[in-house]
Image (tube, rainbow, N blue to C red; front, side, top):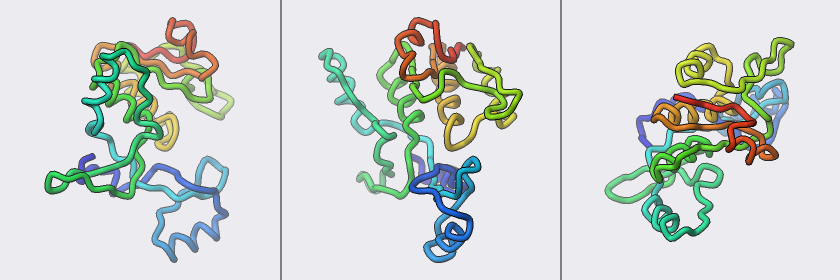
Length: 195
């Protein structure tokens, strides 16, 4: 990751348990944590979530894929590191799993980026009476919706942004529920992102 990534100035990724407002304020004062209210469910600590620049093990992953092995990589986003004096140094942050999946998909020249989650489709006006499923999105539509603030920074935002980044390379990306993974790959479920 880039040590100058703006995410270090604006932590957004919720981690750990939920707290009441008073307890959250005490943690903020006592430990210096950044605390934010999380979608009406309580308060949580938030940490920086910088954009990953690469996958340290990308060469090995590519080798294993060439050998037709099944590879499980960047689970949970991976361990955030900075390169300093030709060495890797861990840093307190969270690498978003969707962003690292997009970086890895690009690095291995994947045909499709499939992001699986617990909802069947991306939604506009989530949680309101105007809630609307999105079946397909092109890159410019998705960017406009992101600019309008439709997708939360700590949840759907990184998923949509990752799909925009990948589809912007002329490829297809999909956000779908785990139960609909195969249908989503066939273009029959989820939110399909196109260039």
